[in-house]
Image (cartoon, rainbow, N blue to C red; front, side, top):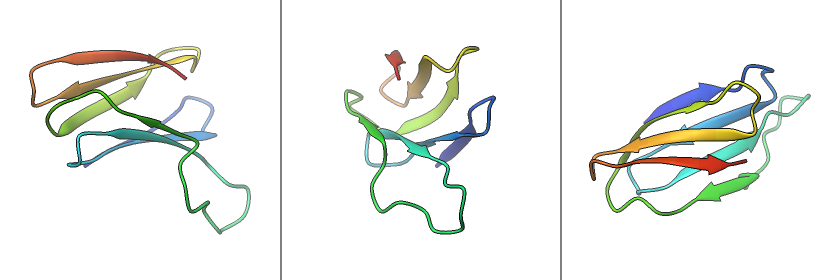
Length: 73
């Protein structure tokens, strides 16, 4: 599992062993939403890492399928 907050701290990128990554909106209160804002499908193996690119309009993910992907958020 990999976690990465956006530079503004308002979004969280989560990469897990089910071959997907997801972007969550960080709540202002203590209760998190039950579903992600966006789910990123496309890797064929575990997503091992991810990061927001500078202006938060894109994220990049890396996978054990030996690919990287750039996603528009």
